[in-house]
Length: 327
Image (cartoon, rainbow, N blue to C red; front, side):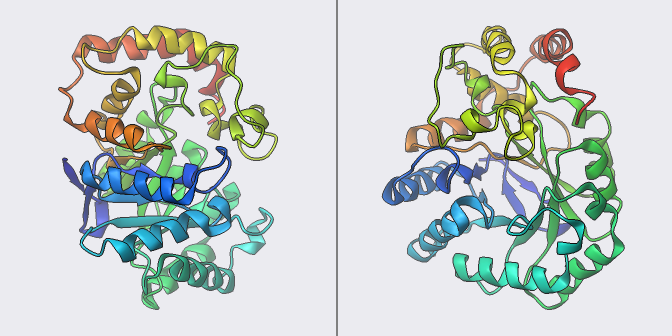
């Protein structure tokens, strides 16, 4: 699989990574052995980048990755985690003492001395503009608790504020055919600054797979049931903020753009890979088959210009009015 330079880190990561929110919680139950099988399938397919967080399953996702790393010491995996959501979302909780405690916990969960990358986990907007916060992050690097730091954001404005900080190594942001706004300013600014872009929610919580109908029912403990209107966390994390029924209709049209031999999900991933400045896209997977299919998107031929134009037209007609002004 293609490996891309990770901005200021001097490391390369696979252009398709693996998001591991599904292995922790909020997507229904995933058995531990099944989770390890998913990790292994991704690695065997060429994935070298895992993304997790300390709150996915209250550390379960990190612990599963840590176990996998112990069992597969030959696998050279770059692991990005996140911190900041173990306390109420108040700017005053983003302190050096808390950063030390959170990263110590993640290091223990993952079984490593130094975290490859820690990201602020969608904190309050004011945090991205705080000099004290970034000074504290620099201290974590100096203390070798972390090799580098980045941010995971909800809005383009937050991303631009973080990119302006000289120590920021990466920005994780929602980017998919139903969320095009980051292409206007964020991705170009990151390219110019040498900051990596991690594209998350690449399938709009599964909408872009084309597998759902308006009658699809998700489990009660699945965020696609309990967070459709932002009841528990930012609405943009669920279906990219697009209304479910409208999203299903748009997904049917998107599926018609898939080239022969590619699924709609693979087409969405291929579209993201082709955006200049994207370092890695991190789809989740709940089965080895999903992990392998996602990784295979990296080997697809580039989408032609006509398809790229059609994606832009679909967004303008069906999606822009819902999401563009909000994020």
